[in-house]
Image 1 (cartoon, rainbow, N blue to C red):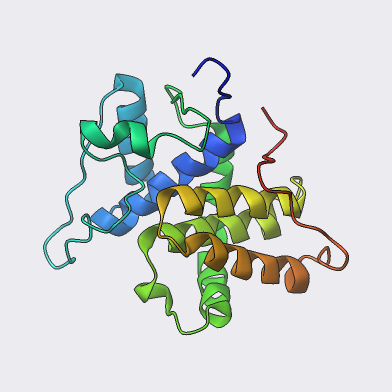
Image 2 (image 1 turned 30 degrees about the vertical axis):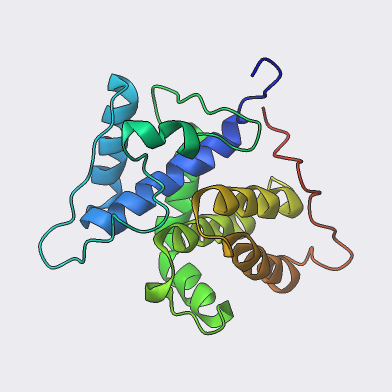
Length: 201
């Protein structure tokens, strides 16, 4: 489509950081190993299909996978409304910043998600939702240079694209509560309007 706009650099960086956390959940790899696997994929322009180790349930058939599926699914999974996705050949610096923020504060972030998620334990959440929430909270609390409304909107839109029918509302509810209760910026703060994204292009 001639008039379509590309993902902003930071939107794609968020998606790729979530790919790393998703891979960690799927394979049991550490953050460095999972990031290196994704780097190889980006450098070579080919897809690696991670396999779960023995003892971890086969969750690769979830309704939505953040790692790209078979070739026939690429167009569906790589579109963002009217936008297109063009992958870099290296993990963006912002992806690494997000991963570092989560790994440095992962226990606190996971505990916060558990306390805010009504009727959902962290382990029962869809993998995509769980990892988008982890990164969204890490960004809100530890990388505050992006306006919180922009941050929330970005993760809500990624959840709508890559996860279940209700995931956008679920992610919005938890991240909105983090903004109100943890950042000191919630009062009188309107979330980013639908269709607006991170201004970082």
